[in-house]
Image 1 (cartoon, rainbow, N blue to C red):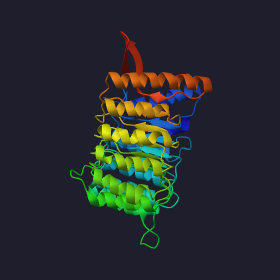
Image 2: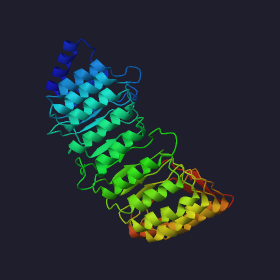
Image 3: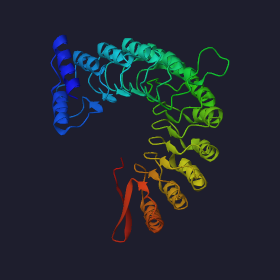
Image 4: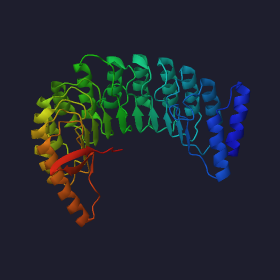
Amino acid sequence: MEEFKQTYLKKCTDLACKPIDFLESELDKALQEGVVLEELALNGNQKQLFNARVQPMQVLAVCEALQTDVNVRSLDLANNFLNDLAAQAVASLIKSDSSIQSINLAGNNIGPQGAVAICKALSAPGCRLQALSLNSNPLGEEGMLAIGEMLRANISLRALDVSNVDAAIKGLVGVCNALGAEEGEAGRCNNTLEALDIGAHNIHVPQDTVTLSLARMLACNSSLTELGLSKHRMVDSQLETLVSYGLLRNKSITSLDLRANRLSGFSGPQLERLLSEAPHLSCINLASNMLGDSGALALARTMPYCSWLHMLDIRGNNISEQGLVAVAEALSMSPHIQVLLIWGNVLGPASSRAFADTLAAIEHSQDRAGQEKLVIDVHPFEVDGRAQLAFVQVD
């Protein structure tokens, strides 16, 4: 790390910018302990940088120093209000054939020009970057269209987060087309990306065009295993389209994020159908919808029979006693469930007792079998003989 430190300080001098004090101290600490830093964590939200965020010229110095380094694998520059100039510096780093495999640029101020520069670097032959987060940057429609074109050329990326980037309809459709072009269509289809988050697209009305593009992408794509569709304002009829024409034709998705949409109890039959007919789907996040008792009853009916389902999140769905009791009873017959999150619903005496009894029986059986304990965000206790549930923070 001594060579990297000296190179970095020289770049700061050449660019007439102040070295990042926190980075200097981390490098000194690594040298004293004789360890090699594989990650440069320069997230502006951490205590040491909160009042001294990384500036664009400082990013340029870091990126130029990293071009000759072979140790650092991950670069975190999130939440620093960085602009397109910093994005161009990162693009140069990506082009340089460095050892960097993961870059986090979430929560900055990178616009369309910065996105285009990064996409050009990612489209170059020999690119090694495997994970990129541009979450919460104002990329706009132009930036998302550039990302779609990049995906047709790139073969290294495995994870991409472009949630909350003001994507607009054309941008989302462009990304979907790049990931789901049918054989014989113009343009190459990306078949290497494994995780994609395009949640919170900031389109303020439900869009059937986007839903149809997503369904078409899912029907054609065979590489995606994780898909984030949170805050899409998806309604029940759109979920039906997505399930019928996309998810049930896809054979690779194992994790699906549908948080904070507009799904009601009428989506129950579609969720029941999805879970029972998609044996590859092991994790589903339905938090912050309005499934109610009808949706919970549909999930409870299918839980015991879906041995492939390992994680279910139904927090904040306005589920009351009837639905929660059904979920608790289904849980007792679902030893395959490893994570269940239910907090934020209407927990009453009956559901508290049902979960207390179920969790006690599960704990006893898991102790006897030597299995891993169920992860759940409630803990049962009793007051004057009445069962109560307390919230438990789950990472």
